[in-house]
Image (cartoon, rainbow, N blue to C red; front, side, top):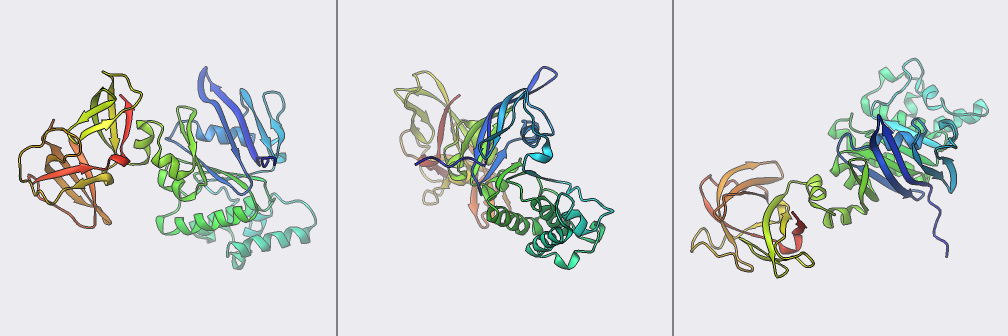
Length: 359
């Protein structure tokens, strides 16, 4: 059985500005109806990648395919309007002098009656048919975003590129409009490439996350896999706060105040970072600060002193100073837990939620 043809495929895209590599050998493939998030910090090359796919920017090397057909390489460049690619940006970019109907119909061709029918169909889908004769300034931010979505969908693009399109909306509106947008795009079997620097948004929206750093894609996978099997320490830190223990490997083991950790394949004498998230720190309430300072053997709690505690709404964040070396560890606890500074407590960490990386 032949594998399905990607709706969008990019191979080894590279772009340089003033001799500096901005995008380096980026490759991705996206199937019909699939949402891929290009996730990374500001300035890592995400938007430049989108601009090359859209045809706004030319690549120095690499190829772009839509439904298996080459649309761009360093020699062949299909004009943007003929690529079958839609665009949605943060600023909506609606024409203020055109009505909602005329904004949605802007990219359509064909008889007037067919264009009008397509406009009415899309405005009904985004629940804005009653505003068909209104102008953008008469609409709220969320309503303008839905008009921009209808306009982008009107020509039935095979690929939709989205550059942080929801960041201008308040939190109350954002989730609902994101979900509605994805439902419509999936129903049209549109391949979606969404750019964002917010891990939570990528986790919520994506079927696949491509983690980008310094112009390169460093890891690709389903959200669960990228989160639970990060490629390096920076990948862990991008998704959440982290705690880091530094240790030295001896006999494939790294000794820490919480016991020994397996470090297979790492040579003796190598410094390693043991990285874990605050939600995987456990407080051993049974000890209540009693007993001698434990030695760093396998599976024992470590003695710490509370530095500060803050309630964050759905959880509490507690910072501890470790007796072992004076370093600070963060722990998150569900609901309200606000121990006083100076209180002695004992902590353990979940071995199955720790990552060991060469230092």
